Image (tube, rainbow, N blue to C red; front, side, top):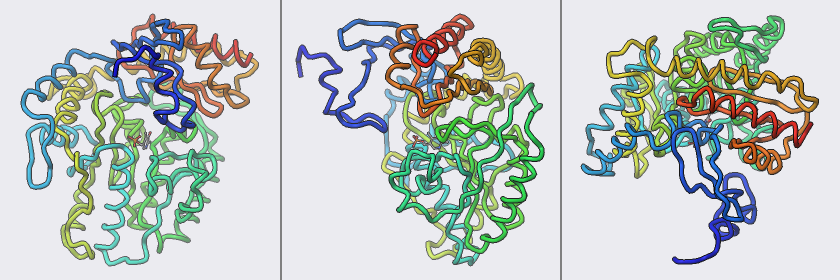
Length: 452
Ligand SMILES: *Cc1c(COP(=O)(O)O)cnc(C)c1O
């Protein structure tokens, strides 16, 4: 449709945006994206290049228009973009699954490809329920989840998000069935492998959680957590020792431990997977967001043979089938790009993980963010500054004026999307030291200008 009206005016009232009123519209239209930069057009038609602090919500780790990812997408387009996965298979899905299994900790050997993060968590919950049913435990259908968590926007995943602080308080009446464990104490990683937290807080947390899980274990089907870093629920960093405790409880009560690594996976927190900070192996792991380097929607669930073989006995009412199968399951285009993204992260197949490129990239992000955000701690409005791997968080004493901070940040050449009392960044891994410096300065200037 040819029209002279600006993109922003055509958008308003037509399209919903995430967690927004229909008439809220968007602040900017993206006209180009390359590397760590976006070109934004405002309502006056003015174009402005900004550094993307958000990696399009944790996903675009290799930057926009990455030549290797572009080539992988083109290569697969010339074969086929999509075919159904029922009864059919293809090379991109098989290669991706083999490579994810090789990267994953422990014996997570079986893969379910889903079309988004929320759906992979839904499938994880189904898998845990079917596991319990296959074991003949018909009363076990609740999940234990951490307060402060976020696991997605569909109804079952809303049920395991924090019921009060989370984004789904409007729906709590529909999702009050789960068992909430207190939010773990906060922690800081001072150096690789070194964590600071209050041991007494962790001990209190542990005794409460042990009691809650023991009391309710006859009804529980599984334990769900975002390892070490709770993202959209509040950017909360907790001690890896918490995962060791959850692992023990899961073993004691035969509860599948589900690690939601959708935000944390692929190096973002400084280890390939956040569970690696604790050296534990979950029974089920969900991956998404950065899986395709931010190109296409795809998620993956990995599970251990213990879980898969319990289903395979066929003792549950569903027989041995895992009851899920989306139309775009295993989308070949997305799988091909995901394989190319793993090449960029992990190096060519056979490269030792400790030498993989992501490690140096994320270490550079961490030191750049520590240096760039440290001065924020001196601002009147700032309550806390924390950095873990490629994630930097500035927490204010009051809720952020989101439109004002966003506008001020764009004026300083950076794109951020704050929520609640949090202004945070997780830049693309390919960001240069100069881009990180601009990001830090712009974020600070925006916060100071709006909140003081
Ligand atoms: C983003 C996210 C999800 C949901 O993924 P979608 O692809 O948005 O459905 C689930 N869990 C965590 C931890 C996430 O960060």
